Image (cartoon, rainbow, N blue to C red; front, side):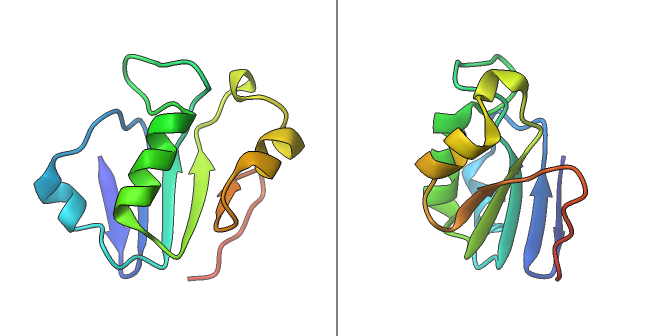
Length: 96
């Protein structure tokens, strides 16, 4: 399930999405999407899949959520992300 509120979209537990639905996610200010871990997973985006999705959708900012300890340490992973992609964290507030 995905939710779009104006220019913000929230997708969690995503592994695939149709081209038709991707079109509904264009022109976003903020995308929040899962990036579970480095290794592939049968029902969730891994980091590579999530980054590919971000590159396809082209939101202004992205926050990865639904991340596990298998993704790595927050600070180390954050250094490897594009400048407009961030790891979400407990207590994060996003102004919309």
